[in-house]
Image (cartoon, rainbow, N blue to C red; front, side, top):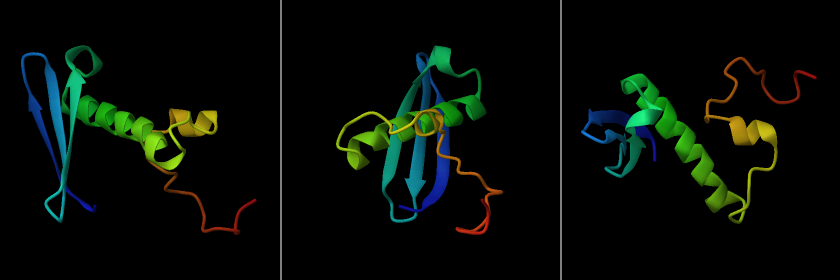
Length: 87
């Protein structure tokens, strides 16, 4: 799924964040009121939740392999060089 848009709605109990793909598929995340004070925080928290869930599909349901993966929000280092060019 290639992300096309992100929709955010605020309700009485929290935030609804919908990640919509170019093929019409969507992933919806409910963020509880206490975890986000605004739309940006709601999106960031929803991304963190999705990263935590990927362990269930890619690592046999186990915990993250290391503390970096566990703390990652899915934003890989943009300034990292191409493979094998930095040691």
